[in-house]
Image (cartoon, rainbow, N blue to C red; front, side, top):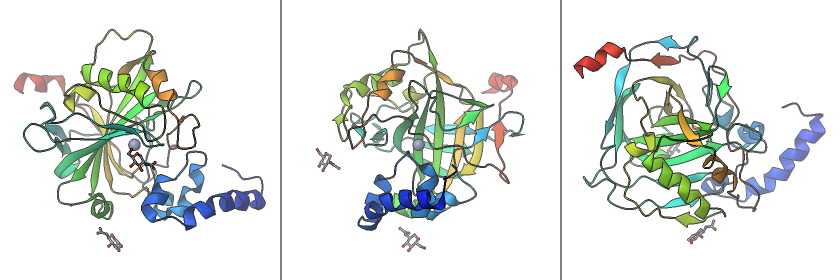
Amino acid sequence: MNFQSIGEFYQRLLVLLPFAANLLPEERARRFSYDDPKLWPYFYPQCGGSTQSPIALSALKAIPIGLAPLQFGLYEEPFDELLNMRNNGHTVEFSVPTTVFGERPYLTGGLLRDFYEAMAVHFHWGSALRKGSEHAINGRRYDLEMHIVHRNTKYASDEEARNQTDGFAVLAVLFKVVRHNYYYQPGLHEIFSSLLHLGDFNRTYTPPAFLTLGSLLGNLNRDNFYAYKGSLTTPPCSPVVSWHVFSEVLPISDLDLPKFWQLRDRRGRPLLNNFRPLQSSEARQVFLSQRPIADYVWT
Ligand SMILES: *[C@@H]1O[C@H](CO)[C@@H](O)[C@H](O)[C@H]1NC(C)=O
Ligand SMILES: *[C@@H]1O[C@H](CO)[C@@H](O)[C@H](O)[C@H]1NC(C)=O
Ligand SMILES: [Zn+2]
């Protein structure tokens, strides 16, 4: 963004300062806004770092490499309780419950050396006028992006994991709007249907179905993904995330996508365009892991 003048810049900064000054750090992190992500680094220095997310991904520029396949532990086991979805003013999210086996689903493989426990799921979207995925693939932004946030089981809390370069692993799934979605995705259907109950800030809703985490991946090909080291895409932007972004893009029906646009933020305004702009990927290795078809014979 180009500020017309230094004066305008300070004016904007001053509007935000009273907010920032009186709040505890956790509360401040909840109060960031997508109106001006370029201002985030003034309140959260890590947002101005050099290994930020999201980035533009490109099959031509990525390093083709056979990373270890991702392994999805307990992803197909039902949760032992219903989901509690919430409009937190920035997105719709839910905490991942434990499965009937007592543990949460977990992830390893890819860039990961440890086990990462699934903690929470949330979404980023645009508006009727703008596509709102966070990552772009081969020059295209898509309509919606789902993040499944996993925390390294070595760390006992999010606060501790945010201090560690191997703290988090996020799985990202991009969605493209289609006119008729013939392809029934049961888990996602429950989530998208729930949005109608989550319109206002802080509303919660419990879909009446026992889901699995794997059902949120539909029939996605889990073998092909981009992987790189980056950051949380919301303040405090800690550079502690191993990103795994699936190459395949899932469909979302043109009846479901607008349900996201009907949500409202804490000030009662439409909750739209909650995606962070692309960050520089200079000096970073981005891998594209693709599994040869022949492997399937042996697995
Ligand atoms: C995170 O790091 C900061 C700065 O080094 C330290 O003050 C804080 O106690 C750490 N927090 C946790 C939970 O490890
Ligand atoms: C959100 O709702 C919960 C439970 O209804 C309430 O305890 C909490 O204070 C609310 N939070 C905000 C920020 O309004
Ligand atoms: Zn996210």
